[in-house]
Figure 1: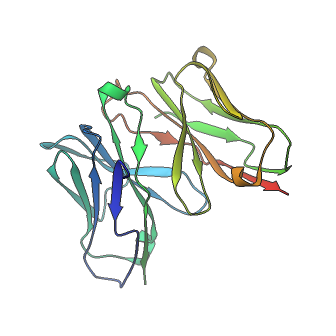
Figure 2: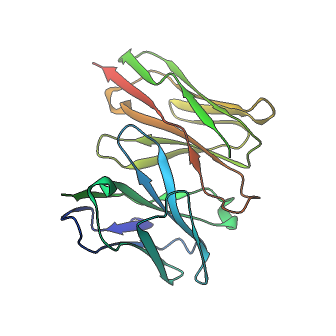
Figure 3: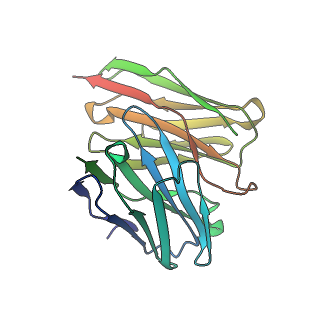
Length: 113
Length: 111
């Protein structure tokens, strides 16, 4: 089984809808991240969490919110989806025990019509 | 913030050829990772290499932290090597510890 899982893997939604992307990890890592990738570009940070009570905005947090329900779970919500949020979304984890090497989930491909 | 530049942006190879991908970064880093993004969009960890040299099969990587660059070598390329290769860096002593990604090198290996 994969160490970092994301659900759903693909999602098509309409403008104005609320949507939640979920991430779970079995690595026991403290740090979790949400990134977004637009076509032809690298990944950019949306939100990050160093533990359950420590959540911080990243470079492009506008229009997104997150919830760290447990050490192993980190969810990303789009409160009112818009077409320019169409992208590939990745969750990642890291921890001091692994030298902060980041491990990524398989990604969620989100399309907002 | 740290800037990451990758070169070349695009590379076309014949199967069996060797290649070198370069990553330059603008500041000191504690973490440098190379990833391969396959045609299905998945990011595959290739190397965690903040300094030194590592090898894994046909792939190897070298990071010279004092000169702020890293190289990824692919030998005897195969069609399955096609995809986008990303370099990403971070300074986990900073407030975020997130990775800063370059724009990638798109590799196409022709049979």
